[in-house]
Length: 118
Image (cartoon, rainbow, N blue to C red):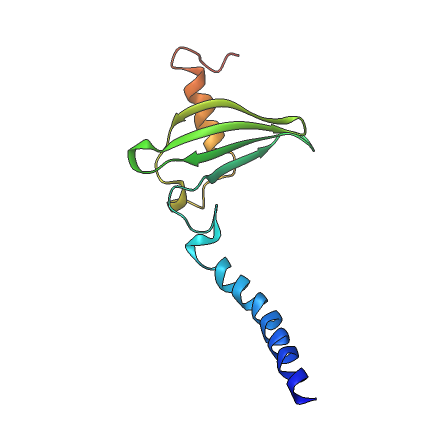
């Protein structure tokens, strides 16, 4: 009966190593998007408009090629509303108010000729 126990022990050893291998893979750069990879899309700001709609600003690219995409997110899909050059280092300023990125965007879109008189 001992020859039949060895394959069973190997089977349990392999099954026990699967969660360990997955845990190690999750902590490596091979994990895919958002796994600490440089240049991966990074959320900058989120502004909820309603229960199902929101504006999201996402930074994409590396170095001088960085850009911010303003996206409209709804149950029907995601639509690019505006594209602009990255505005400084958002990661260095986590204390900024949640809507600061959108206020800056809207002031740029409004332009210098429009005052506060709607």
